[in-house]
Length: 547
View 1 (cartoon, rainbow, N blue to C red):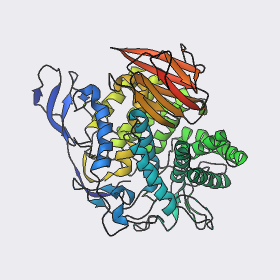
View 2: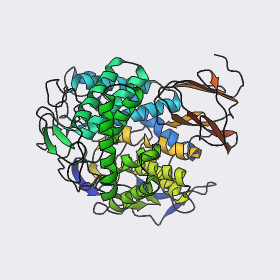
View 3: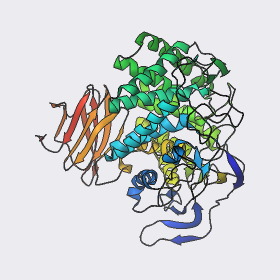
View 4: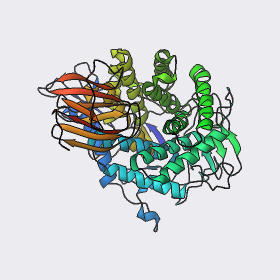
């Protein structure tokens, strides 16, 4: 839940005055969203403010990272706090001066979302600086935010702390939570991040940290029910006291255990038992009841009937990547999207609209319905993914308009406005620079035509890739996990794709290892590589590749 300083709803009713933009067919309205005047098409529906519009999503992603590189001040106060960027120790910034919000530090949301945003941007651009940024950030988190081995929940990540804390020990200043209290779901997400960083870097520190998290999860897994989930939502790590017995955001925990089992690391038998309990709980309770409960890291929710869009959204995104998890995948994914529409689009904070210029805009949780850019990006990613899976073009339209709306939430330098319909809601680092941007890559994979024309890009992968390199007529990367699928947009028709020097074959579909090619026109192609091996992948426009 976002701290509200002053709530003053800003109305953005459609203007009756349009300024025709010459020779484009687009119109500029008198209305604005966040930093920009609204541009609509001939249907009076929103399109990106940036021109050329074919580059607008790319521009959005690049500028958000450029802002992190160039414009973020170090934290206030004496050293060593002032030696680190502001996002290490504060949840958000208040204004264009980037004054830090002193509400709390949501480390459990920030670390997993920033890692995903970084690794997908790195794959997309080949810019490894983002991976150095997140590696350093995670290193600090392990060193300053891990429970002692003597605790009832030992060697487990802290998910919150007070604003400005150099050591992370819990968000106590608000009196909502107590010392050493954590959200177990977010700690599992951090554990998954540790494992992914191990795959990228090969550093044992990250592997051991991931195994520690998995061991604690496995030893505390229980048979879930309608009132107590497979793991407690919140727990005091020092004593093991359960402070909130029910939560539903467990896909990060499940994925951590699943990845370690596949890598043959840790206590595989215990992990499998815990995975089975988690899967049974998810499919039998929140998937059927609709109580996708969590309250984000600054709330004290203690309910089994509370709804949070993040939990349901995480479920949808996971199922789109892993449809085999759910036997009723084809029924449950559209049901989950409709759930978001019912509870967080068509239900709104007072005075806020459900739609603007054809774009659905999305709220956060039962007690915080204000429309947010990152939640809108989540919804767009889900709709795009379901369009790709089902062929239903109505979901493509929903995704397109919502993503277009999100682009207005960055100024020309990449500074974000998280909730442009509400004055006084600060812009959170976790949401604006992690959770929102990473959704665009899901959309690119579903609709590659939305990626920039005339450029080579790895659009999306579920697995961790390293050694990404782009060159004239080739793309090179190394896969770190088995059974992966990578989606690319290329300016050449591949003549040769190899995995560790072994050529794979072009196929009509992805029913087996190989690759598919579809033309986008004007010399651009969509390529999907399906592999069952770890190793170096080279995609080339030549039959023989020089190495």
